[in-house]
Length: 114
Image (cartoon, rainbow, N blue to C red; front, side, top):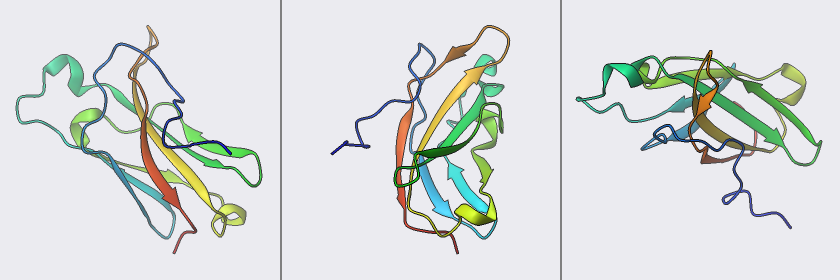
C-alpha cells in the first residue's frame, strides 16, 4: 500500500509551503498556507500548484499555475462526477517561465466534498 503522506508530486529548490492545509468546499478544495509578514518580493509571485489524486480511480485533478504565494489561499475546482470520491491532496509552488518549483507538501486526504 502506498504511503501518500510521504509521496512527492513536485521537487525543487523554492521554499516549501508552510502551514499548508486543505478543506472541502462545495465547488472544490480550498488550499491554504502561511504567508510570512516578511515574505520576499521575489517569492510573492510564486504560483500555487494544487493537486487532488483519486487513488481508487487512478485519476488526478490539478492546477499548475493558481493563486500567488502572497494570497495564502487557492481553490481547486473538482468536477461534479468526482465530488463524492476519496482523494489525496498536495500543494507546491512554481515560477512560470523557468519552471522552478518547491517540494510538494502533503495536505491530507478528503473523503468527499460537501
